[in-house]
Image (cartoon, rainbow, N blue to C red; front, side, top):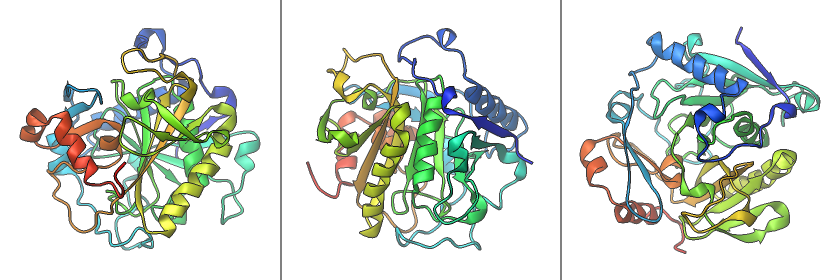
Amino acid sequence: MALQLVYSPDDFLTNVHQGVTKSAQPPSPFDTVIQDGWTVRMDKGLFRYRLGDLQTRHLPGHRGYVAQLNVQRGVERRKPQEILSIQQEFNGKQFNFNKINPEEIICEMVQCGESSTVLNEHHSSPSKMLVLVNVSPLEFGHCLFVPDPLRCYPQVLTKFAVEVGVETIFLSSSPGFRMGFNSLGAFASVNHLHLHGYYLDHELALESTEVKPLVPEKDFYRLINYHAGFLFYAETKTVGKVAESICKVTDFLVERNIAHNLFLTRGCPPSECKPRGRESSSRKGVRIIVWPRKSSFGAKEESAFNVALCELAGHLPFKNKTDYEKATEEDVIEIINNLKRHRS
């Protein structure tokens, strides 16, 4: 029986600021469960490699890219499944999260109160989110968040998955806790619905970059001066409404077989965007960015610089030393521009 992490909206944190020392914002109960559980399993040897302090450098330039060297992830990671379609059905014969070592499970997240009785889209029982370690981590605390694994959902976002993803950001006291999603064709390696969550103790430009209103009453914006994409902004009282709007966009993309990546991070309100270097430190809300992109199917070279949710967000995990040492902001922008469906 997995440890249950029961939470309510009363546990959501809004007094989070970027640049505040860790001692001034101690770990929340959520952070304690995730970080302690992850560290215990690392010490037990349940991971494919031991993650130490990663070599890190900031690429010069206005995008503020954070590059990290993680050679072992490219060498030791489980071979990704072959993906042929963004609408590919779940296949129980392939690897999925019902086949993991039970010791990899950290906890099961359940919201108490009214939200715990919200019914799953297709079933008559409450939904739960299973949290397990990613045995090929890219950063400290790297976990996978799997909605109702026994129901065998393919890698297509649901409102429940997005909603709990946003709520999870609100449960952390760390401005460096991030979450994300790769669709099929956008470097998802397993066709079983899951999100990634991890800690990155470096500020990203996405937290405060300027946006242009599209449908502001729906908290819907467009990124400017960054990789073209859509941005949603959620506060604690608008999580459900924003999750529904996000799924309208991702459902549209899936129906048209358009690959996409999603990234969730603490961020300042769109009204408080300022030029880089004079950003607001307030991180009371959550920014959710959706990037449509060209699909990438077939076998991948694991040591290559493959662009998924982290890279689009400005966190660049490199799997070979040469690329890590030589990469420039211009190189990264060129690679990412080649993935865009439309230039902007």
